[in-house]
Length: 211
Figure 1 (tube, one colour):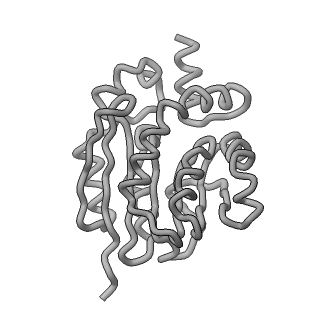
Figure 2 (cartoon, helix red, strand yellow):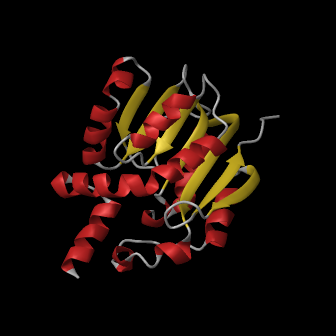
């Protein structure tokens, strides 16, 4: 049980050597989620993209492959994640195409209407108040900007023993959808992909044009 608690806490806030090991273990399980999310976002070559909870930075590389003349901003609460992602994306950072920030998803340090696309992959169940994060994503998106929130199918993920430990918030899909719409997103829809690990839902929505 102590090992399960350790794994659970590291999944919520990865740090140190154990956090690095966890990222190495989890990334192959979630990279297909990230690839699917990038496809659904319909990224344009010059898009400015924000990813909340970028992990070891593998997802950022996928986004850059689509936004070939664009820019990716990453936000994380884990210093270990920033260290790993900085190494993985060193060339893009040096070229000025990636910038990483240590910040909370519910208090993004950016101006309104900054980004074309926003995404978060495999973070919904470690956020106590996802609605607050959705509102911030909405705020920093430009009008007509698109957001994507991808997370494992709840009933499948619940079989993963570490999620039984304290600190996981296994939100119901209907509750997440309601919070997403309450943040202001329109043209909302939820896609499901059963071909990836745990299965996955992706909530998609757009920020309406300002009259």
